[in-house]
Amino acid sequence: DIQMTQSPSFLSASVGDRVTINCKASQNINKYLNWYQQKLGEAPKRLIHNTNSLQTGIPSRFSGSGSGTEYTLTISSLQPEDVATYFCQQYNSWPTFGAGTKLELK
Amino acid sequence: EVQLVESGGSLVQPGGSLKLSCVASGYTFSNYWMDWVRQTPGKSLEWIGEINTDGSKTNYAPSIKDRFTISRDNAKSTLYLQMNNVKSDDTAIYYCRVITTTDYWGQGVMVTVSS
Image (cartoon, rainbow over all chains, first blue to last red):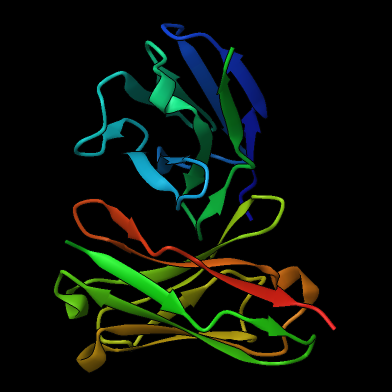
């Protein structure tokens, strides 16, 4: 399996803050990485695919970057509606997810 | 509007079987691969497997293979997950999913494995 190690597990930030979430793969995943947002009581929703391609309808304050084994999700200016849990997921081989980052407002 | 509606979740004893269904609408069901993803009580996500458009090819996560079977009926726009020899670790919310221009998930169905 390709293991995905996500950090931090929990993040508290203020409205307007720049927020970064990291994901490290146990081997090179060739940029085959998605980011998902899951709000309380809802199914996950894909924000970004192929490391840095923003899904249609997702605000531009979300962006992704990375290569090899290291990947990052950035929210440039945190908004109240961004409170959620975020997951990374690789698909270089059969898909595996990170354990999630729970993002709350300070 | 794309909609996926799962059903069939319940309490099942260890070693038992269960079949989940996912009825799709709002898009041409037979044109897209579909998959199943589950979320455990601890909230982690696990991909179960996928099926191609005509049902002739399936891929599974190694931890699932040989116990679960994914199938589809394009005439009924329905995806299935047959779960056999279930274990307590299979307790989770099960989602069906399709990726067209974006990803669509069902509302999820709860499966509890307990004696």
